[in-house]
Image (cartoon, rainbow, N blue to C red):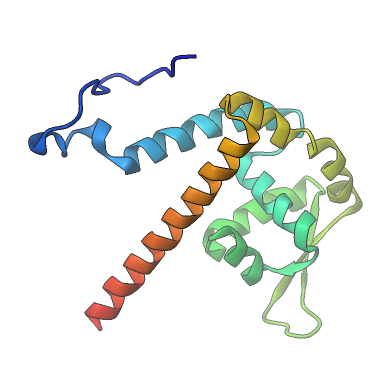
Length: 167
């Protein structure tokens, strides 16, 4: 099956002067794919009554159980300013509960409610539906995920190296 290209996609290999074209930017391809994923997730998650960012929070809690907000943010690569509104909406929906930590009153723990635990059973079909929407087989999906993880690590290292040079 031929893959659909977006407007402006080059059909010939780029020359040296073409490298500043939008369709030659990996960041744009990743952003376009991310937005397309967002659209698919929006449709699939509508039945669960949660958004994609909320789904990511739930995935971490289903996998790790109760967590401090700080640790949850580390898993998701989100700061507390972004995470707090997500948690507030999940709490309003009855899926999580936030409580001051008994060990450290400066810390807030996030716990799944019974309703949050039960949602996991309904969410089991989400990854299969997403995989189906990609038209990739499972080996291709695993390979892509591994390459994206490698890309993320490389970019994190580049930022860290750049910051180290500034000091």
